[in-house]
Length: 168
Image 1 (cartoon, helix red, strand yellow):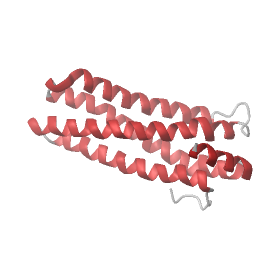
Image 2: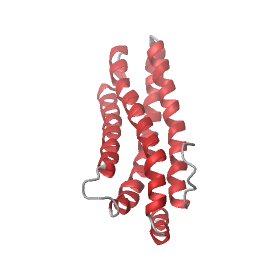
Image 3: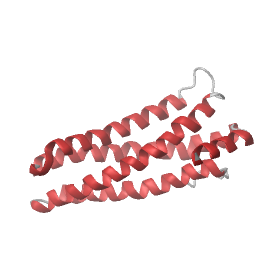
């Protein structure tokens, strides 16, 4: 995050700030997964219920954030990158990977329902851990490379258009 000294325009700073908020949620999710790993018995089931709630809320926030990037920022940057550049493709792929881990977690948890046992909790929790790992790397890439690149490439008009899009 502190790696580049680039001052970001308002819409890019908004995406960066959203990362800060999402990362706090991710850290809480990760803490719960660690508690699940080191606990046992009925408390594991209670922790899992808490984890499910956190992941559900986080998933919605992440989708809103990803949509801003995928519908606003990514298409704008793509106009500047060469035909062989895979930067945006890679970013979108990471979004899909993280979203899939979260969806798998939520789906499996819902299918297990109220009768979930410790074994199921343990293997379903792995999806949340995988989402955390994917997003941790992904956010770092966007912050160190993509946002500064966008700041350099996008015109003042494009940044204003991006900002309007985020409000709309």
